[in-house]
Length: 168
Image: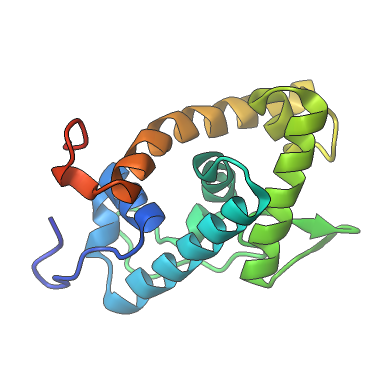
């Protein structure tokens, strides 16, 4: 349930899915909620445009910047260089929509080339090396988060917590 001081819950399926995993997100001040909803919508739109798993792209972007969300117990976001950690020639892409679009495109290409999500996410983290050892921990975290986020996202897209199997 939303925080009594900030009574509006998240809008948008991906933002609501994140809030289902981390309820404190609904308790943020309205401006922070609106910024998080906007960033989540950009990630969702980019993933859909590239035809890749929304939860996987969202998990990667969450690992990079928490989509700009404040940490639990804080009320304001921390600055970040690139929404999804995207760099071009060692310079971070600061435009949120472009960062999300490039992340989704990169993940789609890595998935096609590497053959699995763990190897693709590792390649995303290590500048293109499928399954690189130094990217495996990062990839394992993203794959695990996507595994938790994906079913919640589907519930939100298909009707929210009222749908069978979607509560809790």
